[in-house]
Image (tube, rainbow, N blue to C red; front, side):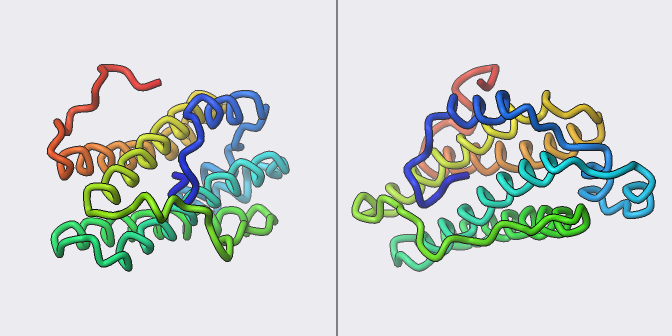
Length: 190
């Protein structure tokens, strides 16, 4: 969900997740689900859990900032602005849960950057903003898709798949707002 940076190639995000060797623990799953009692009995989280959670948190913070940029651009008509703010709200909820989970695991949550390097000069119309957001949501789908099979705990995979589903819906709605088919171009994501 890199909204201020030009999206990294999808393969590099997936390669990072696939080659990091980091898998979220059962404790992280329980914490993500808000099950503190279960988390407490699940053992200690590995530091890698916090690293991967912080990677996801950083992406969510970028998404929040990117949708803020779109909202403040004065390029979005009211219905599209409302949509952008709704999606931003989803990303805020994701970020809150991730940050809370990181704290519960004894880690320090990542913070938003003071400034992101977006392609502001390329955003000259509502269509430009929508295309940018759609690319970023597509990248988020691919990143979460790359993470789901890495989870050793089915509950954690389920939690990540839930966020993946939300990102996929964002992408489909943005495609429709652009006048494209909301159906993704392929029967399988990569």
